[in-house]
Length: 240
Image (cartoon, rainbow, N blue to C red; front, side, top):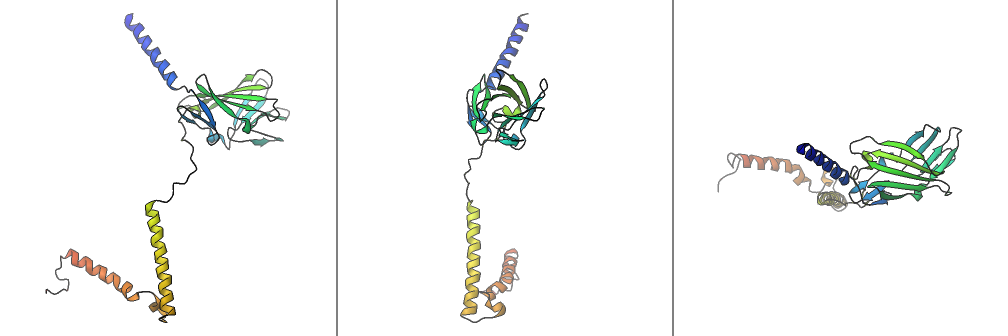
């Protein structure tokens, strides 16, 4: 009996610690990630920038669409959260510029207000590691205030990489050396051609700078390799 109780306490302790580890204490809205920066990393909803989240309230037949990244247009309504009625009417339930975020009960929460201030939306972002995202409508209370829940891996801090700083890392030393070398080659060829043609009045291949050296270079390289691999033997050189 004692061991059974101890095992139960141990399992409950692990569950409590695991739950606590997944909770966040702060959630500062970050437009670059369409999410927020938490004390445990970034929560990014960038994946929905071009495909808003969608949920159907089956009891009323109302559709709700939410784009965490920007306003979009449906019919004659432009907003980040749009309510679509069966009759075809669309209502603003949250403008993107009004988006705020905070940490509530250990998870991220996003709040939006309609442009006219008549409607409000709250989205609880619940972390479920290695799970597919599920967007659900929780209800409307009081009237004009809509509650949603997004649960899944996207709501977990660190599931997506942090946003880019937007600053260029610059050229590497190798790239700089290559650019300098190519510029030097271009200057050498153009300057050499100009000198050969303009000053020496050379024509044809003779107008190329140092043509004798470049045409003999392959032979010199070959001779150098032969001398090296044969250790100087039978290379055509005479002893002094």
